[in-house]
Length: 250
Image (cartoon, one colour):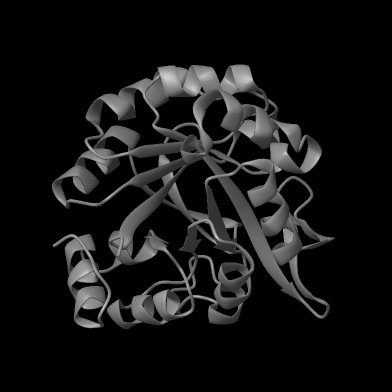
């Protein structure tokens, strides 16, 4: 059985690293290089770096910053934000990323997932979904408009898998930064609909929050607030999930 990965997700606002609450309010958590150095020392399995300004401001990935953090990053690095073409994917990987995360661009140009998977392999393409609960079920949240659209999260996850994505990064908008636990129903619906790994993100605030997400089918756990705003470390998370019966690198 593959070991469960503990993967911090860090957000970059164009100048510093931040942590969001329900995709809106942001708290400063430090410089990119310093944040990466801290997670290096804490033996995380991977790192997700998302530039939250690129898409909204209409510019491409900041290759200088990506290069700086890649030089400090001694674990696999996934980079997202502003990636709209295969050329962008190429530049980001050449700058030091191991994988790319594609979100908004896939909604407007589905072939980008397929083209990226053909050139670099599915293992390098992480399809990110921002999910929001609505009276009509979980819908895909459009970061640019700030609203959920009519696209079902599970339908979109299945389509992304068919297009060639190697993993799904599943973000709960409602639980983001709340530190009250993952959305277990969301995880169960998506994990049961696809066969590729599902990395879940949004809501972890206590050590006891992780095992329930894995029981619902998550393949990997991503978190941020618990590491920035509590004394808990990624190694404590690994020990907790191992004690709950899931394999982890400790």
